[in-house]
Length: 188
Ligand SMILES: Cc1cc2nc3c(=O)[nH]c(=O)nc-3n(C[C@H](O)[C@H](O)[C@H](O)COP(=O)(O)O)c2cc1C
Image (cartoon, rainbow, N blue to C red; front, side, top):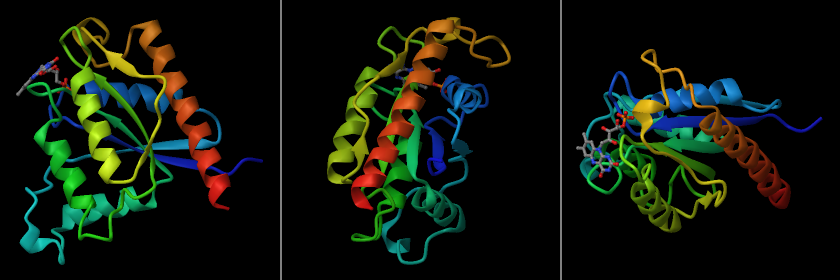
């Protein structure tokens, strides 16, 4: 039997009714057999300060430890002002430090995003991909999951009600798990 693949899901929004967290919750229900998805919260992680990178604040340490332990990462990000929300960039920065001890190194990663706008976080997603070059991550290229007009795709309780989006998230999860297994094999 194939080895279990453990994914960590990160929503780039702290908002209670976040569409991106809702998208991750939908992903938990769509996860393929032989894999798990744990959603990790960014709430309370303090702003990055290089003076503290040798002795991390507890929530930043906890976040970095979870990223390190994951086989792969799934990010669901909003787009803020055509880019990545500060809370997500902040968490990425913490887990990348100190230099030479990044938790992101060689991690497979899948990206999706939900926006109330028409481009479904495309610009934020490409900014993330640029960061992943320096972090030496292995992002999955396809499928791209850009959830536009998010207010129409989720109900009032945050349940995903759009069948096409659901299918796209399922495809992304399957591809990410397969990609993670393939990369693991090349390292074995
Ligand atoms: C500071 C800020 C900037 C935003 N900038 C964009 C943007 O550039 N593009 C976009 O499509 N939506 C933008 N939005 C709207 C977000 O798509 C919307 O708030 C979305 O619901 C955020 O994701 P969440 O539901 O996961 O919190 C912005 C929202 C905020 C609060």
